[in-house]
Image 1 (cartoon, rainbow, N blue to C red):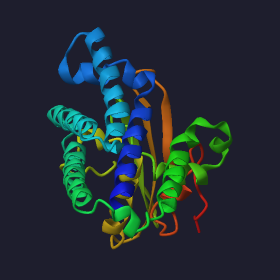
Image 2: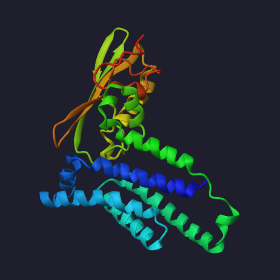
Image 3: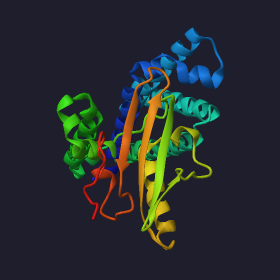
Image 4: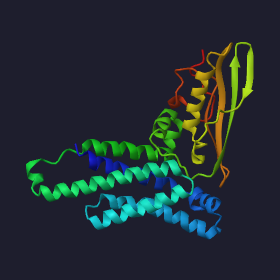
Length: 273
């Protein structure tokens, strides 16, 4: 029930989640924009703040029934994503542009139905929106998990929340992965697999790199004497030098070892036989 409204609300929540990720020095310093556009430092800071405000305010206008506000917010977001695509974030921008086209068509259809059925609310009761708000509550909880110290010691909760938290594509960071192939008779140093065509902004995405290693396991499983992969993946923010170990394990190829099992500061040997 109320699918269009639910979808619109979820899209707005996603925009706000991205905006929340930008409310930190790594983005507001304008470092990413300066690197992309080669503009003066102060202009980069202002553009970073402006883009954050766009993601915070324009999506909220999509919830307003007044067509003037809805279409003002809609055109603002279209221009915003066109600019982001020009800056190199092509895949994500095209995805959101497609979503905006759907919302525009849905809004036109809704307004048409309102004109045709003036008394529709008396004929058909308003559908329940309980599940929509329940999902939004869970989504909001996942965005805030990293801000509470209690969750830092509960990696399962953090891993679950990470699956529903947008990756901060604006982060300027370097990442490094060390990998070893484990054989019956010893081990061999290797390197993380690379995927052709992946957006530059996604190169350091820990979940995608984890999936890359799982795919590598499938390719190596028939190699004589091969047992598993051991590896560490970490990244470092360019702005403040803060580094983080995203995952590390001595038995990556174990089918029971999933991203939800990832530990942050120690070798995960939970599934080693």
